Image (cartoon, rainbow, N blue to C red; front, side, top):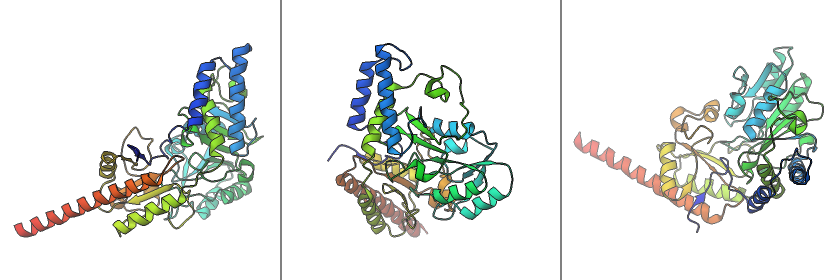
Length: 376
């Protein structure tokens, strides 16, 4: 058994060996892809190869694939660059969507975390102003998949554009950009086993996009700044390997079955609707999420409390809040997310550590109750 059971792939997935090799090769090659000499042409060839690999992963065109510094930049570029003042976003979107447009109108979700399509239809009908609708493919905390095809159908009928944050879905479920029908699709390398600091925005041919910065005209004048060649190279390599998908649903099911057996009143969120196969959001009754994260960390198991993009802060999950989960219950929920290198032994280690903590806390609660009874 390895020294660490890493089960926080939705935060970042460890670098795949092929991606590591691609990064090192690009670092050794050097060169600026905008230069016309030999070293520059070699760097350009690396970027072009990676663009083909990333575009192929999601069935997109090479010309519509714009490299960014990650999913956050891709989301911001789409939301600002679409040129629509009216923006509608689901209440469970990532902070990089919600904070990119603070005045955006929030669309409710149901108790399973699925977008309320009737609410979207009403919102679109409430104004004749052309809108941009932003709905993620898969939720980062629960793994719940959203009805993107229906979102696109309703948006098209109202003359709206559609952006989809697919950061947590690509590589876990098949994604074809053309079939999906959206105008903008955001990707991130480090969720696939690529390096941090690399991502992409896929743009439909003909969809409006205003760049959010000015500079040397890189990425066909859509994203200025010298390309991160090593990061892009690693992204391409990871995308190539992620094309085979992620077959870990059986391991996820083993986790959920076992943990509910340990604590019958534990709750798995989104379990009744389609989810990606790698994500479990579950409450441990009566045990704060931060306590769980620290205790499991001491046992050599890495999980997280909600999203991992808030500077290390543990705070109430806006996703569970939007789903109507009571605050006290949500405060005991953690996220377990599997990835390309997850092994069965990692799952057993998690189960044992989770059970040990739950029994320890439960016994402590009983002891405290008995002490109070005797004192009375």
